[in-house]
Amino acid sequence: MQARGLDVTDLGAHKLDPNDDYPDFAALVGRGISNGDFERGIIFCGSGVGASIVANKIRGVRAAICHDTYSAAQGVQHDGMNVLALGARIVGPALAQELIIAFLNANLDTHPRFERRLGKLHEIENKSRLPA
Image (cartoon, rainbow, N blue to C red; front, side, top):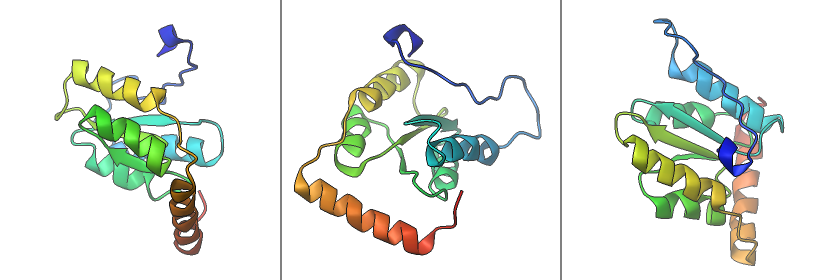
């Protein structure tokens, strides 16, 4: 990512700590998105499921697990996905790299139907989520 000229912030873990848990790191990324510190984030856990659940608890975060490049791009284009969740036990390094590239290269499609859907998503979010 840095070779592509992107600013990268690694939020850890930087050393093995048996007390580390995926919610700690997924929440850091989610809060960074919610606070406007980051435009997009990538989170990992064993399956990607837990990390995506945690991230989606934070206002403004739209995280999804993707195992294929179509979903990694389409999630951004149609749904405004801003966090890619990957399962380290599910996808290997080569596929992970392809998924990340698809996610980062995608842009939100501003077609009125996608804007309408995102508006509905924001209404739901604003009624049911606690602030970051």
